[in-house]
Image (cartoon, rainbow, N blue to C red):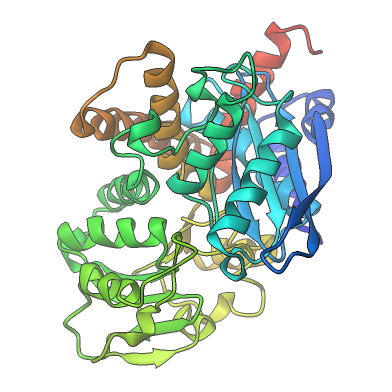
Length: 423
């Protein structure tokens, strides 16, 4: 089954659970708009290379489209459709006034120079200039994109006549261009706040909790840092080059591991060229093997389809915290549910990023900016509220957290569609 097919399968299950009208499920099974375009770029060697770009605007019943832009050699339309659908659900779960969208460019950004990377980023904005805007579609960073790339994009958008000063069109920007304090750590911090709620409801001691984090990018690092600072023991970390596991029982300091990764310098002034595997004193292993090591909480923070029917039975964690988008396949989900493993779904666990993007957008529209603590506290409050709504449905319906999250979202989206005369 395709990634989008898996997403719609969960939509249909949640629709039955919450008795959502079949017409509403039919509407939500289809994106509002699919955009696919070519981006010809003159490379440093003088030759022209054409990159494939995507943007899927899924549903805007609750507000402007919202969703990140990823750069990845395996980016494809099916993936972007699924991600746009999940963003629609995620924004509704978080209770923020956005719809869902997602975008991407099929490329390996680490093989481009800084100039090539900037050119393709600006070309992407020009291709979408009439279909994005502060009240229309508000993109943000995703896999392999960050504040620097968002800076190029917002600058390109505002250079178009009539768009001057409209910096609310992108979130996740550099602070100097209207970005929000707290945005960098938001997704990882939000996942930590959700995990603390789960542990509290399960009456588990956070200081006795062993955690493995698959993916030491921005999200994985900040989650690990918050967890470590709270007294949890980080027993495993990884990145695209491989993984490390602590066999000594002392745990890992995420700052030390990340410092090792960063010491190799930058590629194109954007991407770290090092690896966590350079850290010494730990057992090296593949990403796949790390997923199966002893821990209490497994936090996949990399890419989709990491936990499958093939490895679910070997996962030893009692809690899976989905910091990545779509890391668990439906077959694996079913196996976890049967075993009593709690899967905290991506549409809740990693919503801290879009919640803080919303807070950045509000600050941009008001031209009034808040201190970092204010931003994190407001995000924390919204994440606690989202968790409470999901946990309540989970207990009431005796269902999984994923189905409960979808149920919360579907009620909110369906009501917005009805109020706007959609059905």
